[in-house]
Length: 368
Image (spheres, rainbow, N blue to C red):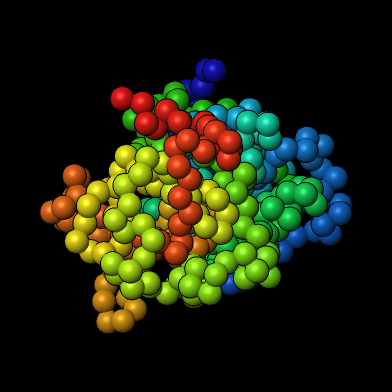
């Protein structure tokens, strides 16, 4: 795809300026804490998009979100554009960068639900954004960089609101707009596939995080969090206290602290695979200790300043179960990292039963 000389000069100029809002530009109000953008009647909006398996993601500069989504197996197409702003005449880069249009730099993502779930795409999105800030991501500041998730069908709305509720519960503040798509206009050609055409181009998403999603096998959509009543009925009192009330079980008096049988450890609430016996090591802490999860995005790490300590809490991705804490500089760990996990938050699936229980796709974890 060719760019004109004018387009190239314009892109360079905007990149150097960070596309930041000019000092005299009016700032339009962003979403409230509830994450509900101002929009047109929902039914009218939903009729705009006829392709069913599509979601619109605003996550700062659209170059990075577009590249992230394109790297995920099962995504058919990702297109950069401008969403939920004034009108088509304003849907161009120079005008949007004034901060006066209400447009968000947004990526239209079309996906194959047989290969990847909407849950997986949304949780990948939340993994790389900062949901606590308004009108910015990374070094980019302006209303065009406001985060948002915009749906076009009732089915997508249900999934988006369910995932947003999980993310809201583990965030000290939640500034992501959640609502229906009002309008969307594709961005200029030089913005499309920008990081493919410019491998060293600017991106606010670290490359290491981007690479995490290109070979994921665990789809969180297969392990959705049950309703609160079902969780209470499913768990023992100790499992409930640990996973739902951030409890801690007694060291050296829990089920898996000294077990090293071959198999995987899954979230006791959802069944999502979290850790493998291949990464479990003997530790004097008195709880199960792992050097790493099966896949990094399967666990969520959050700051924890409770009990007068500064620690990093570990929670499960789709179930949001409290698992334990992660520590660095551990001399007993082969890589210096210790995921110190409560046995009560885990269910062990022996290697011999993995195929029968639907985890056969992870058997190669144990190949030499």
